[in-house]
Image (cartoon, rainbow, N blue to C red; front, side, top):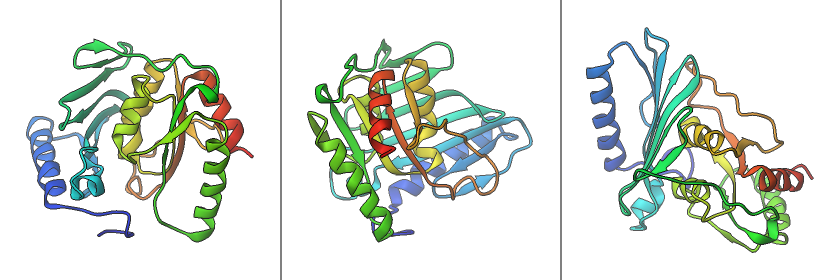
Length: 234
């Protein structure tokens, strides 16, 4: 375990991370890297890589298929390209800024739903501070009363399924930069929004403390995002 009972690290996390970092450093030795297990490697160039070598480690450990790898490259703090890979389903979600988002080479789109009652909504939460958990449960209750139903893998699967329209929206209370920076680019490319819980834009800091900041996010198409923000702002 790591910082809480909700967070685990496995040999697979570490091996996946080493493979990715070794390849990046061999090819782009001056680039910076922010990775979940290793932390921050300060680079000499304006480019940085953000890596989640095994997102959904708790699912992986339990033998559930909801896990994958996320990698994003940034220039001066601006995401340029991202990929999410779900190995159990052999699904690759690829995005280059200005070129949309594709799944295994085919274009995808967010749900066209305009009301919460039309969607399945993903919720992600972890064990933590009791007062914070109480707040999250109140938000969960308000969302449950308004949507068709709730779904949750608490992993990148929820983001991928929202990006391709299977799920209509997503709320996650426990994200780090590597969990969401690639998805933020993909939501933007698809004309949707992924923001802070209060609707403010996500601001990613790439300094030495980048790995410590926690993000709470809401995502969906423009209509669903606005409706979820109305609920979370309560």
